[in-house]
Image (cartoon, rainbow, N blue to C red; front, side, top):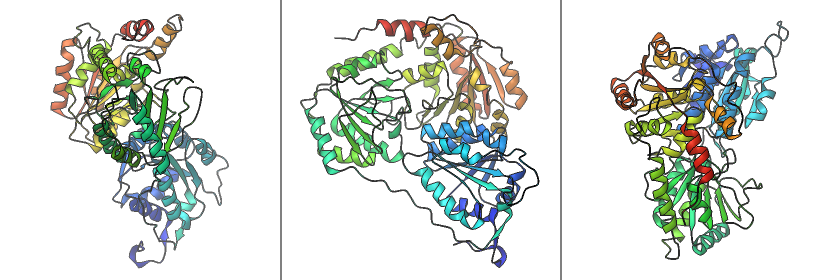
Length: 557
């Protein structure tokens, strides 16, 4: 129950709103406010919630979404109406596809009486509805506590995602006698049926070469320990999708690789040979990690939600309910099975690890992707965090980088939007100020939100930003090559990144030789503060490894 200020019987709606957010445990609001938010901003001034002023609404949304991903609690961002709200759209889609809990707050002109016509007014709620789990305009100050509680509940429940509340200017200024705040609650999750678990046990025991697949939906705190228990108890080898990377570390003895592609990679030799895939946390927002055939291997779908069946994914058994609970129950009924044969899988594991480390010390300059991944791997502490933007290098990091712990690789393989890498890394650096945190961006993606360098410096973050420079949109050039199209239309110029970083007050560096890269990163982490390292990259290995080798791959017999 909230006690009104100074014994008053009423409270301003904006004050009530902020107190409802405090009740939900909100720590930060990431924002680019406008005049329609001024009452709310004034209420926030005396709150324990910290305001983080961003330089673009999209970055505010990316930071809020990443807060949700790292904490499991909804991140909160704020914009004004019209163009401020439209700038949140990409971040909303990022959180929706990536299953990140987030609450977006936007302002609006007065709805009871307005003398400004349609100036800056669009139907923001209608715009947000297709890309959120819930979107609502607040039309009565007294409904604020219940709407805030409902928004947070929906954002957190499986499958997590973004919600939107619009607070019009006149409603924010209203007085209300509704001061009750609804208690925040931890969401409860249903559990799988006894029969489904028993059927899964039977299928696993009958299989000869079962494999465990860890997908994006398994990246939940409650699931990680259960995954470990299942692996320890059964001894079954596992692989992961890009967004399942790090749920179980890549140095685990049973890890055989990451499915960075849908087919044709070395890892798929093992997948092709398996007769049962235990698919934990499958999420259709990712490209399929393997393609099912009608007469091929069987698949058990273990997830919070039922499978979406299509031509390449049609599991024979679905075990629906809390994933962690399901895995614990399976672990109780299963053990190491003498009938399982994993020898071939471990042959492939050895082959995959040799393949991804084959060019770790390559001295070519500009640097090739394998050398960049290996050097980054060598300087990151066990719990250090890399945040990848989107570009060609993301595939190389997905294939070659071995995550050491959960959420140590922030990788978006859902919306796969450019521009999210730097804000995501900033959020990680805020939450984990003593860890090594690195943003890894292409020159194209970095320039989409590079203005947030100023925000990072103002927040006094410890952050290293790699800008991999090839002066083009390299991922699309690779696609041109795959499709035998001319290399055309995708090159651009760049600023002097060292001078650019220095102009914000960061410290800029440029790699001039492959041997300098690793010591440069080590020095930046030792110094602390915000550093930008420009790394020229040579993508000629794309064609040799990701096109020619995969087309010619022959699985080991």
